[in-house]
Image (tube, rainbow, N blue to C red; front, top):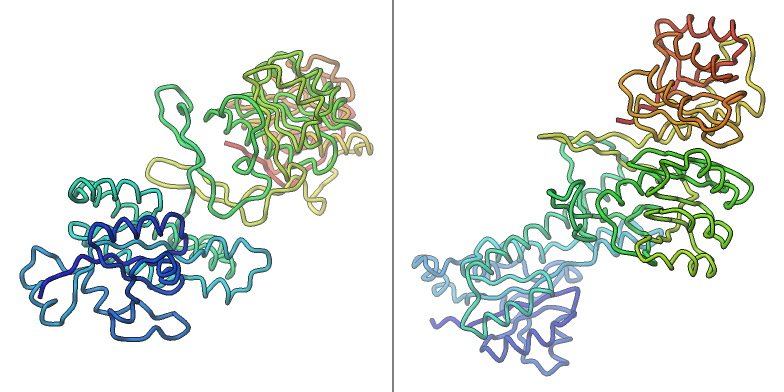
Length: 515
């Protein structure tokens, strides 16, 4: 039996498929196809063979069963160098299949549709496609398998030069298993979310490349930015860059921190300034221009070369203030025309727009940290203060204004590297102490860095006071109220010190370590 050169084509994404099929036909390949692809190729004048003519069995079960047949998979898996394999094909009257071009049902697009029903999602789980891809890829020495339309050109080029090289076939095999792994991950993640399983026994994640970075955290490190395949609203992966050079690894990391903090403030006009992943100036006000001035004035030294995030449109007045200093990135829902014209005069400033800056982080989002040989996975910390857990532990209770500033300060301290202390007044940070190895250093740092009087300010701590030394420092600085989680064996010492100095203190019962 003389084996004919055959290519099996069955694609969901039909980009470039007619040109590919015509070229394969010109190289002497018979074209086999199924369903919608068959019709597209036939209408283009290509002599195409239906899959049922190969299998001798009709498509059935509404197309669920088309290619799951020995006439297909034996033709894919037979090793041409194995004499016994080839004799069996001849005995069974099965022809080899030398090229497979398959991409899969659009499961991702299906589940991204609003209010998609479970049954529709299940119907868009491809069975025959992944099976053909895996069979063809396993026999990569003899079968050229293409899952990505971007690879059509290289295959045609090598065919024109005499045949597809073994190296290219090996690369295409890799792409198949990478593609099917991501496809299966999307399905399992969708189903896991439907069931409500938070932490399965085995877990996989699927990410899509956004860009290659110039370098990583340091110039000697290569880096890439990936986004989650399941879209996350209000995430940097969905931002639109209006102006400036491309973002670096550190830009993305720092801006992500600014966005996470900004989301704590909802619709209240707020400016967050971040430097090296730590907030350096935060303010909420009646207008965004007022918020920027207050945030900037709280630490004009650190904000230099930093990142500004706003949950309101950047207007002309705010842009004029920003333009006076060197800022790496400004991210906001939008920029007025006047603001864009002002800021875009600087060549290197990055201007980003994105939706969802005034909305909380989506439910079910993982917070992950890679460690050597493993992955730490936890729920996202979406709590600030649980009103049901608040304890008023001192004789003096905070005023309404102090309590408002306590909430504000705790939102900021939650996003500051531990050990963390934030001093704030009038919904504006005065001093921030972060990343210290003990709490008293963080307290002293926050107070010393304040450029204005801390008289009547509040102090927030991300974790409990192990001693009363932080209260003593707060008293020296004129701080009138303290908010902290509580839970130390020596809480009584801190409470007694507050009562001695006339400082109000509340315990929240919620720690906010950020390591």
